[in-house]
Image (tube, rainbow, N blue to C red):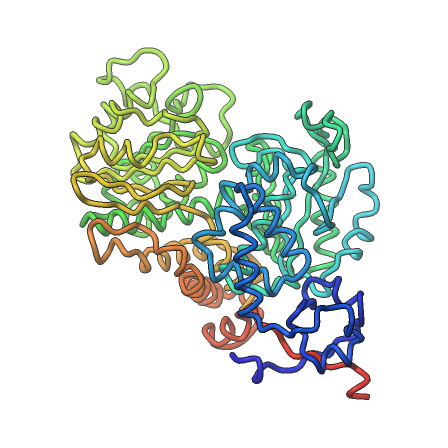
Length: 562
């Protein structure tokens, strides 16, 4: 849509107050008429720039930044001063800038969040002020909060407890809601629940901005989170709430407790599972097989690993397997080896995937059953890693897979890059270029035997922005498992590998906005099918009406209409 066809927006701010509001500030792109009407003459250089001219200058400044973390700081500063320009720049350079805004660079940004902090964004709700939650939610800048991403900072990527410095994750996630999924940024609210940190180095660092206290645990912790959720329900009853980077003992229980109370999901459990399923569906389709025929080994049986396994089970059941038949095709390996029904201290989610010693009678293994044992005896065709343990997909394990499947499907998903279970280059070399690979962090293309393979980043950004857009478009009251399944199937249908053998499993990042739109449509239609929508209308129309593009609207002063 051109500037001339955009509906004028009535704005009451003037002068410095207008320039300091990131969603309204146009910087040097304010027209002569707007500068006159809003008291901006003299506050800006005299030349009026177009958005395209600003983009050229902003990109040049971005390239001047000498390191990845410096580029991240530049983009965060731009977001905090001119959000339209920030999102216009991001959407035009997504393949280059997404790794800077989010993984892997956001990990380093979280580790230094307190040191690079410049301007307030979002809410920090600390345990000592737990009785003031309603007032803090009312203090939020957005007039109409539509989507919240909340973390307690305990399990930030593969980096562990970062305390309040984990706020970089909700900020980055919400940037992708708008940059990838067309969600209006004015309704987005990042929140950190500051319950202390057990990261002593962070807690004692002179620059640390959080509550300097060890983590609250047990009943006090759950009561605090419950107070937050109830406050959200009171203040924003129609909001979409996304839980992010909560530790294993808390993530699944919180999701199960609240998923029927308000519209919410956990991206580490459900988003990771859904994008993994989408990539797996594309891989089995490309190899001429079916998901229900696969045998799956999964390293890392935490909330993400069990979530992936459950999503794959649900998809297998869709293909006709019983629940028992589907689960019999899984081998989940955690820190103590393959999950066995004789083990103590397993979570309820893990118990659903245990194997018995009698099933392994001919394996010749008496003690701990390793991933190596599974690879040689379980004959997996799919290998997925969410362990955070580097170099655990060894040459021996990968070559064992090659012995019983022509095209092994191998997803080392741990991030950042330093935590990856195996590099795509090693996997493709060990499989003679036959492996179907997707990773959690970005990697350069790999050439094997004269053929170049582009490796897909199995990034949640392919799912959660479209999920959010579809949910908001139809006003979904809850998020169902079937909505995630439909999202994964929509993603699978976008796979370039369905057209070309050496093509990546997932579409390129520069196609992520149209991909997110297809995901949104699938999710919206499924919500309508299940009777979960509260807004009437055709799904495509509702999604298109909400879809936001980073463009400057013309402003008019209220005085002009009085």
